[in-house]
Image (tube, rainbow, N blue to C red; front, side):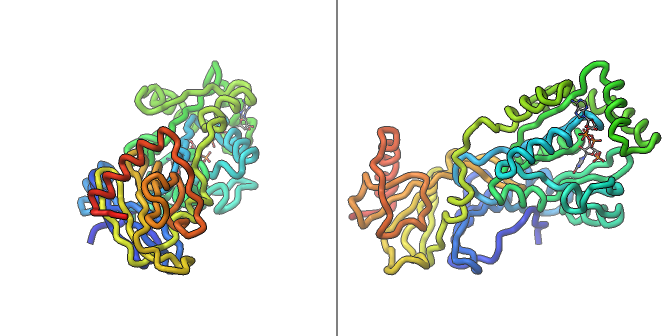
Length: 379
Ligand SMILES: Nc1ncnc2c1ncn2[C@@H]1O[C@H](COP(=O)(O)OP(=O)(O)OP(=O)(O)O)[C@@H](O)[C@H]1O
Ligand SMILES: Nc1nc2c(ncn2[C@@H]2O[C@H](COP(=O)(O)O)[C@@H](O)[C@H]2O)c(=O)[nH]1
C-alpha cells in the first residue's frame, strides 16, 4: 500500500476517474453525505510525489482538491525573529477576515501569555510531534530556536478548502521545503531596517516574551536567516519593516489584496451536483462528462454534457489544484452556440440560462464541436 499524503476526499458515489498526463488522476463525482459533487486530484507520479517517495523509500500518493477559477496562491511569510511578521499578519487577518486564513502551525514551545491552543499554534510535545512527522502529517517541519515547528497538511487544507488565501508564517528552512512542494505559493521575506541586529534586539526586548537566553539565541539565528534570504531563487518579494504602516501596505500588495480573483468558494461548493450514471473521458486537456441524473433534476438529463478544461491548472498537493474551468453545453437546447462558461454541471437544469458567447468564447465553441464529433455526438 502506498503512503497517502494530504486530506483525502470524503466517501463518494457515482464517481469517475480519469488518468491525466503528468501523473495525476482526476476524480469527479458525488459526496455520499450531501449528494453534491466535487473534483479531486490524486497525484501518483508528480515531481512532489517522486521526492516524497524517495525521502520515505516507499510508494507515495497525494490528494489535492480541484477548484474552478483563479483561486488565490498561498503566501509564505518569513523573516528573523522580532521583525514583525506576526504583527503584520495580525493586521491582515483583522482587516480582511473573509479573504485570508492563517495556517495554524504545530509547535513544541510553551504558549505565551494570551496565545490560544488551536488559534496561534497547536501546542504539542516533541514526542507526539516527532511521531506525527514520521506519519507524514506535515508538509514541512523544522527545528527553530530549539523547538520543533511544523505546518500540517490539514492546516493548509482547512484554509484552502474555505476558499481563503492561506497565510503561512514559517522560518526559512520551512520555506525551502514548501518551495519543493506543489503548493505554488508566493514567498515573502521581511527584513528589519538598519542597523538590523540592533532593531531586532530592541523589538524582541520590547515584546517582552522571551528569556534573555532565548533572545540571544533568536538574535544569533537571525543572522543565519538574513544570510539564507539572499538565496535569490527562494523569495518573490523582500520587504523592509521600518515603518509598520508602510510595510503593511507593501505586504497587502504581495498578498494580492488589490487583485480581484474570479474564484468563488460558494460556486465551488455548488459546482458539481453529483450526476449518477455519467461517463467521463479525457480529450486533450479537457474532460468530457456526459449524461447522468442530478438529485434535483426532475427528469433524466440524458445527453447533457459538461466539459472541464484543465489547460490552465496549477498548484497541487497539498491544498488545491487551481484554474479548472467549466465549459458547458446542453444538448436539449439550441446546440452548439448554447453554452456558458464557469458554471457547474449541476446547473444543467431546464431552468438554466445559457449566455450568448462572446467572440473569444466562440473559439471554445470550435473546441466543443470537435469534442462532440470525437464522441460521436449528434443532435
Ligand atoms: N515596524 C515596527 N516598528 C517597531 N516595532 C515593531 C514594528 N513591527 C513590529 N514591531 C514590534 O516588534 C515586536 C516583534 O514583532 P512580532 O512579534 O510581530 O515579530 P515576529 O517576526 O512575529 O517574531 P517571531 O518570529 O519571534 O514570532 C512586537 O512587539 C511588535 O509590536
Ligand atoms: N518551519 C516552520 N517555522 C515556523 C512554523 N511556525 C512558526 N515558525 C517560525 O518559528 C519562528 C519562531 O516563532 P515563535 O512563534 O516562537 O516566535 C518564527 O520564525 C516563525 O516563522 C512552522 O510551522 N514551520
